[in-house]
Image (cartoon, rainbow, N blue to C red; front, side, top):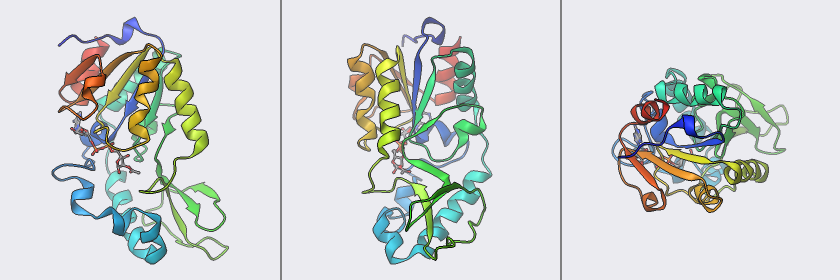
Length: 232
Ligand code: OAD
């Protein structure tokens, strides 16, 4: 298994998913013990569910906020933040909504799927940070519910966020995909932008994924072990 080293690159882009936060104790989404094995997204993670029963959807998100709030960034998050500090051109594009990149010191994190720690007025679209657990009050002054500012199933990604991600991916010289199953689109297509532009590509995962064959280096193991190996 040949392991590229961060030291040999300048514009490193980390493309991260739930597997990075697994070592912090946050369950991934798919597979055994995954969030979507226990909860049906149609009841908890789509606008239709929220329109039908906002309190049920908030109860689920309050539970997630409570659990995620107790978790700490792990070595994988910390290594990424350190690389970002030592290389001006390094960046993070994440599918994670847990905020652990930011808590480990990473900056300018592009959050493709929004954040568990922001809320958005369901009527006028006003967005604000909110880390309360349970989130309270559930309604904005205008009378409408706040909803989690998360890209749920069937929602579109924010165009400006997507543009930022495109720009960073097109410019990187090393793409490191960490802990993502590569099955959720359009996010799963983004690494191809970096590959088309000549970046060296690395996939870090415990297992093969449907997109593994696209990567020049397929590293198998835990995110923290393999990110550490790339730091040596
Ligand atoms: P998934 O749960 O689909 O995939 C997690 C991946 O991480 C799997 O391929 C695992 O093999 C791998 N993995 C698990 N533990 C690992 C470890 N310690 N080290 C390395 N790899 C590990 O999560 P995502 O790909 O992030 O959307 O899912 C994409 C999106 O689907 C999420 O952003 C989420 C979900 O619906 C929203 O929250 C809006």
